[in-house]
Amino acid sequence: MSFSPNWQVLSLSLLLVGGTALAEAPPKTTPAANHVARQRPGHAAIASANFHATEAGLEVLAKGGNAFDAAVAVAATLSVVEPESSGIGGGFMAVLHRAKDNHDVFIDARETAPAAVDSKDYVNADGSPNRDTALKGPLSAGIPGEPAGLVLIARRYGRLSLQQSLAPAIRIARDGFKVDARLHGAIAGEQKDLQRWPASAAKYLQDGKPPAEDSLWRDPDQARTLESIAAHGNDGFYRGETADKLVAAVKAAGGNWTLADLASYKAMERTPISVDYRGYRIVTAPPPSSGGVAIAEILNILSGFDLSKMGQVQRVHFIVEAMRRAFRDHNDYLGDPDFVKMPLDMLLSPFYADGLRQGILPDKATPSSMLPRAEAHEPGMHTTHFSIIDADGNMAAVTSTVNYTMGSTFVAAGTGVLLNDEMDDFALVPNKPNVYGLLGSVANAPAAGKRMLSSMSPSIVIGADRTAVIGSPGGSTIITQVLEGILHFIDGESAQQIAAHKRFHHQYMPDEVMVEDGTFDPATSAALTKMGYTLKQHESWGFMNVVTWDRKTNKLDAASDPRRPSGLGKVQ
Image (cartoon, rainbow, N blue to C red):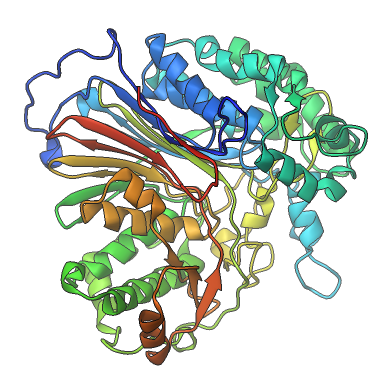
């Protein structure tokens, strides 16, 4: 999703930037951990969901910033121009790689439950989940993590001041940008709920209607909030005037936030998950993301097969069976690591994967009913992701979200902040599916200050000669999209090929293979059906953004998902 000169472009395919300051000849390489060479590409690549956001990142790089400064700029700009998917009222997860010392770190800026959280608020009288309180209005919103995460990245890993990195987003919010078709469609789709909240209607509706495509859009309240963060860091959001406004608005609408909830929020640095597969090291997200654990478990299972020598039917069969087992474990074990003791040593063990692999029949599907019983609905398709490699080889894979389209649809008056609806990502009613069809147990039950489980899977893939930064939105399909992208990258495909691939998905329950239209030919579909699979056709999903680096040729490549109809490719 992005803007071209005619303001109709919805996605960025490729942006590379070079120049005097960034194009120095790379130094001689020396061996590094895991066969990674300390080499600098001398130019930079950004793939994001919006043209304005990518340009903001490039602007910050041109000022002397690094990939981490650019990540702050891209995320903040997406908050302004892509509110349907992410924003400072939500949270993000990021895998960062610092080139100078080969340091990998995971930034956990996931939202947290307020102290007064009460599961009864999310249950109907008959015991079923109350989708309205879980998805709409202030009760659906966790304490936002994105502002604290951006401050952490800027201050610990960036080169520039927070004011410099946030300047593009502030300028765009203040001066305005033209509404694209996707933003218009998102507001139109959520119009009924936006009208429930006066500040939401005032921000997103003009004379009671969504803003027209190509009309100029300004967001002065969010510009002021971003200026407050730029000037005061965490105190500019979690304390003081902005915090007062957030809490007052939430309480006035029936929510339960307190000033203490905001003041106590902290973004966390965690150790990422690392798994080796076919000579590549995959660095990915740990809990409270479920994505990295699931990806690692799937790859460990698949390591016992030579997928490269298989036909499509057999390859898909083994991948789906590995997905099925990993999602089963996702539902049973995972949650916030600060609250839940998880058997990660077991789940990430190659020996555990060996045992799971033994249960896969070579020519038949394993019915999910043979594994612990559960129910689930259809997964959803939201969130945003961007990937960055800078001139020095620093990398950022960042997945950001407000959960469902337009989050809670609730704007806190006077702040311009559209709040998330991430409370639905808790197991509000154990063993009942959330909006993405994912199940949960007591491990992901809500509690004061607890972070809800996520599917976000920002990842970096490092081989002897090639590196990829990869991620995607897509609810529960994030995990399988990123997995399939990793497999395609290891098979030698380009960024454009990886982003364009047709996709399939299995998440244990419902016991069906979700298949993008055109993924399989009739013969393959028939063979999989004969093996016992139920194939469910879907239209396109996801919005993958990939950056690759071929260190042999020192070439960077970046691609955004071509499923957006007006994608843009550009090389500088």
